[in-house]
Length: 378
Image (cartoon, rainbow, N blue to C red; front, side, top):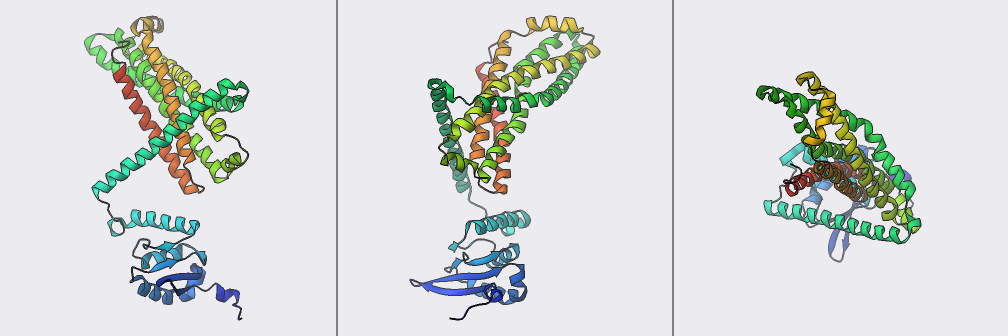
């Protein structure tokens, strides 16, 4: 038996095997920049010959090393797409997926194969159904967790809940106050220009009260929390997936739903309504300042007229919106966090999807509230 030296075993090669009447092209050695430096031309010719047979099967699981140079050489030989039958290791598959995404972005229609419209529509509804099923599953498990903690109060994760309230609510006071104050000034200033035309300066209180307490306050607070706290929740769960902490919880028999999802949902349902009240108050202060300088409305007059101009039902609707927004932001954040695969690319993609989906859902829920309560408090 002749032993190969390390240099020979690392030399890239293609071996053609016959298994049950099928031809399988097995790649071996180091398909990286070092290995291809001397054998690149020869391998390129062999790949062009073998790639002409579309029925060929490829097996690159025995490759000792594969970098972007070797992957790109194979990618070009395969015509810018993976063959119909190819056997890969997971890390090799991720390399070709990145190469496929890069090729689609860089070369556009040259590499991209457009799908029929019907297939795109079916794919869209299939993905949407999958997400909806997962959300319903998380919500159902959350209801079971609520029933469990009601029967066993000692199992309530108070530390996790308090930490999540501080993270999502306490640390968001600054940014929500700043944005609310500026929005109050802008709305008051723009409204005052129109009210001066009709001599109806005092109605600035009605406009600011209804728009901020009923709509802008809850919406702004929810969007800021979705972008700040929702993304942080998704990333934190994703990091736990990457570092295998979620697997460790399962191995120890600890419910990840009770320890991860339940505290975050409860914390946002408590913190977000309070943030809505805080944002409303700061925005009204900003609006009162702008109204004072633009219309001459006194601060005392502004805040004394506010309870008469804005019924309490509007405050109740805004407060209720905050709780509902908090529920769905936390559910979406946990949902996309649990979908993250153990790699950094998936971490970034799912975090982005979490923020986009949360903001979209917040606006959709706000529209539903506007339709359902269109005759309340007006």
